[in-house]
Length: 234
Image 1: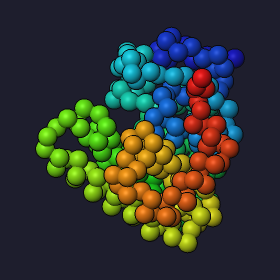
Image 2 (image 1 turned 60 degrees about the vertical axis):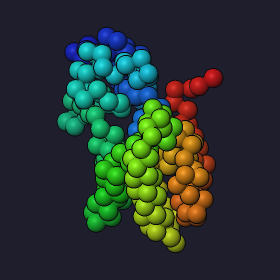
Image 3 (image 1 turned 180 degrees about the vertical axis):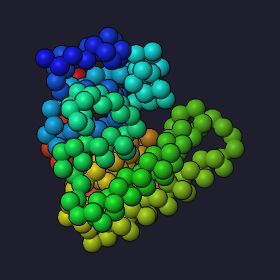
Image 4 (image 1 turned 30 degrees about the vertical axis):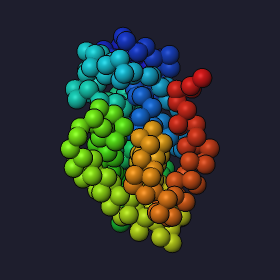
């Protein structure tokens, strides 16, 4: 049996199946990227809930895996050359898993890099902008009298949705008829924007017909639905 005792994180979140990939996450847009990808790829894994509401990502055990204190992170006992691999940052994890399995990423080199650029688009733009919009629209930031920050993030979020809407014109998925990690990286964030952040009307989401259609068909995928319910919620 695989021995993961050298990794401090397993003292707080013990591995029942140490031969499987260990996922440490919380069901945020960044967290579900990885659970969705794993479900789509059919790669055996064990999920451990790191409750960010209780600051569990700032415990010494989790920080031993990700010094930045953010979910998700993985511990793959079967990494490159058969050695365990620790990895954080959801975009990096998506690329790693895609290359490990040969799934959710095109085999053609040019299309592979085109896919990765859209993952970076989400990481560098969509995630930060949508997150700030959520803060100023729904959470503590809404009490700030100066509405310029909210307007700035609303306008930029709307612009980014427009970029994606233009890309999806005449395409089923971001990479034409191939569902990839580019779609996986963006689905949870778009769902969160109009759902949890309650910003559907604020950004005029329904005017982006291509994105609305893409989101609906993406969320209908069985593996995506399973990934969104990890961990099961009663």
